[in-house]
Image (cartoon, rainbow, N blue to C red; front, side, top):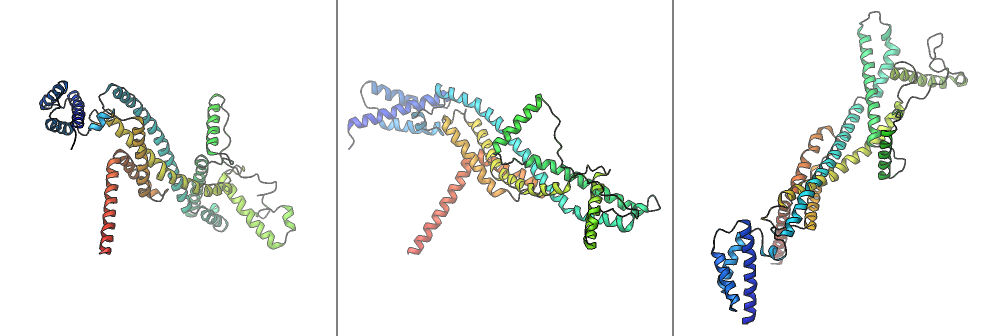
Length: 413
């Protein structure tokens, strides 16, 4: 049996809770019925007279107020989470200022990583396109045409063979230009840091960029040039063949034939790529290995950005937008900084989980649109509606647990 003192104390607590609920509902404009006010006045009057209030009427009124102020609860009002209190209002105003600022900064970061992802995917697609055209085979075919078909000695100005030759030369020059462009892009996307830490390297690059703004210097050549041709090379004999250097003439005949073939290929490519014979042709022997070495590194960076960084950032953005909409809502409990930080962090983690299931093979041109759209949209939605995602996961967990229990009970019987 409950003593009279304990019963009175419990009733006093219920009356205090009813007072908090009525105050909030009145301030928020939710109180449309005066019944709770009448019960509260009667109960407080009884307390002033030293009499215990009517427990039944107070409990009924309190239950009605709990349903009225939902989703806010009595626990929120008890533990200083009333959104209408002056302290919480001041804190909410600070949150309403900083959350948009941080969201704008986050948008800039997302824009940077998205642009980097697009450039990397475009680089991989261009390299694959160049590789599919087999530049070495085209060079060999053109050389064979010049040696055996003599397209430049055609009598007619618009001879078919000459047109084919000019078309092949233009095609190879376009491939060379593309390789040179890819070489410069590879230096930007996967620079050689000479063993430096990534952060240190980026800081040095930033310092160099700032210094160049005030003291501009001509940039170094971005391309590796073909090494200079030693004197006597690529010169013709009286018969029209390439003249071998004097030291090569002491070699055996079979070795001279091999050297002459290599020299013919070298001089042909030099003239083809330079177009002027001035030894300023790009060194494709150095450019192609650079591209081959850069492709795996860039693929790894695409995978890192597409599967981890960008889904995480989009999840954070979704959580921030959700908090911007709800932090000032007087119908929801007031939130502290730690609660907001936890909610935003959960959104970022949910975005990463979505990224695990959404990204295909990075770098493929056919998948570029999907790799830039749907996974990140899903990550944003998951960050915005993290409660719905957790609800789905909880239902899956209960379903698995119930299935396991049913199998165990069936095995036991």
